[in-house]
Picture 1 (spheres, protein in one colour):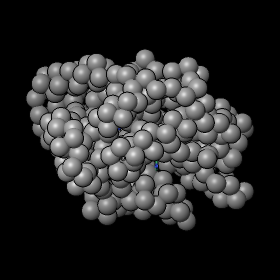
Picture 2 (tube, rainbow, N blue to C red):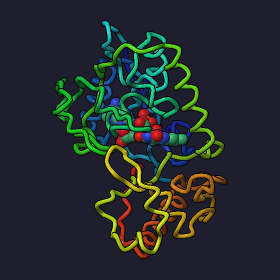
Picture 3 (cartoon, rainbow, N blue to C red):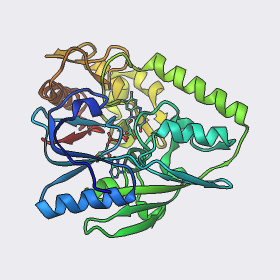
Picture 4 (tube, rainbow, N blue to C red):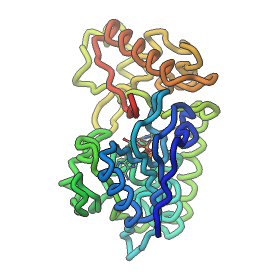
Length: 313
Ligand SMILES: Cc1cc2nc3c(=O)[nH]c(=O)nc-3n(C[C@H](O)[C@H](O)[C@H](O)COP(=O)(O)OP(=O)(O)OC[C@H]3O[C@@H](n4cnc5c(N)ncnc54)[C@H](O)[C@@H]3O)c2cc1C
């Protein structure tokens, strides 16, 4: 089958931010063969390529992406006992639902996280104490030369919201083999529903966003002096999975809640969400991020590190 490669495709519709210009070339890769074909197309033409999952952790520039965007859509899976091997174009929530329906636990913490399994592996997505690194057995991927390879968990070099696939751009994750364990289906279902409801109560889901803009600040990087000035910080330490203070606390303390630039705004409900309040441009968001970084550095001497990935800047 010939891969359908389209031209000048607006990327805003493929991101949860609903922001950004067009891709010069765009395709949906429904299976491994199409991923290989898309990669070959980019290589033949000397084009840069960008791998798109669910678009829930990216900010696309207003001028778009001058290359090929490959949206990974392979979502077949097979289950053997407590092990599931799945195409990473599968929505993460779909993976959670499949696991729970089969009475398998280990991924239920991811309930309500948008995006695909591939995006979650690359960024070692995590929530409520769970992380992808705890359940990945191995990852099948394409390297930058187009060879299909497999890395085991250790070789994936997972860390806090990172992995080798993030550290070495250009690798294309194709499928993930995940180890789960037997659990109580009813309890898992309830946990999943409660988690989704909790997220809805904490996150400004009525607006476009990329989730948390910044990674949480590691406790070891925080000057103890700040605990004297802001004693409440001590009560905000979380294990995620090591001691951190959520960046939302610093953004709040730096008086950034509701701060707006153009159509972008720091959410009042969750200050680490910089929302698309009113037809924001990517430039609005970037300017807001830059201002927030300056304030955090100025007030707390912390270098805020973006979790969001910039595309086409
Ligand atoms: C409302 C909201 C809540 C969120 N809550 C959380 C949370 O609790 N925890 C958390 O960790 N994250 C959270 N996020 C962020 C985001 O959902 C996750 O990072 C998610 O795993 C990203 O997956 P994606 O498929 O959308 O990736 P995309 O946004 O499409 O891509 C992100 C990066 O991954 C790369 N990528 C995607 N697929 C592949 C692949 N197959 N091979 C190689 N590279 C790939 C892209 O090139 C890009 O660099 C939240 C986001 C939103 C909008």
